Structure formats: structure tokens, C-alpha cells
Length: 143
Image (cartoon, rainbow, N blue to C red; front, side):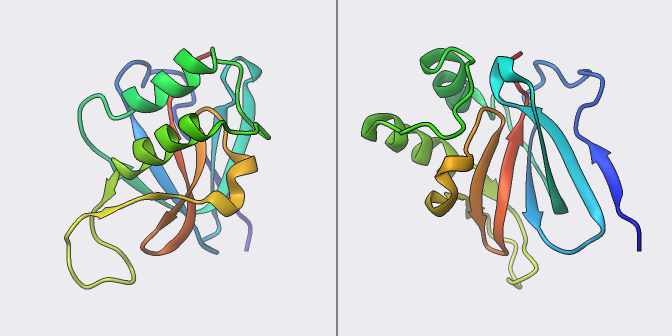
């Protein structure tokens, strides 16, 4: 079976609308791609399924870290200072997913920063743990 590729926000029409998604890793045949890394414009991709996240100003805390604190320079491989890492944990935990393949209820579950993959964290692409397993939190890159 050939894979299908879906680019998140390919033309930038989602700019400044505060979009955010979680891509949960799974063998679906669908690969989601996006641009991250701030001004580095790094291409990222993950095979799996997409969970849209809703709400106003969803990515404000993340932008404060990656655009404000880190100046849009990206963060892949960053040796995270403890205070900044705490802020990242808190920002990720603010996101909630509704429903899950592993749960029968529809109560929202918080995402958690996947610190075993912290070296992969970058602007607009942060490894997370969901109720269904590992994935990535994606949002608008600042470039």
C-alpha cells in the first residue's frame, strides 16, 4: 500500500488563526507533514492520525517560548534550562484531546511532553504522549 501525504497549512492560509493538531503515531498509511524549526524552516512528518485541537489563542504559551524566549531560532537538540523546560511542560499540558481509541469516554485528557524524545522538540513540532501513545503537537511555525 502506498502512503498518502498531507501537508498541514501548505499555503499559509492558517496564519495567525491559532491552529494546532496532534498527530498520533500509527500505521495508517497517511503521513502528515509540516514546517517547523522557526527560521530554520525544517520539514517534519509523522505517519498516523490527526486530532484537531480547538480553542482561542491555543499556541500563545508555545509562541512565548519558541518565538519570544528562543527568538525563532528553533530548538532541536537544545539543552533545555530547567525553568524553560517547566514552561514547555506546562504549555503542552494545557492542550486537551477529546475521545481516544483507548478510552470509551469523551472526557478531555491532557497531553504530556514526551521527555524521552525531548531532543526532537522544535518550534511547531513537539513530541507528546497522548492517551493513545506517542505523537507530535504541531502548530503554526513563526518564520
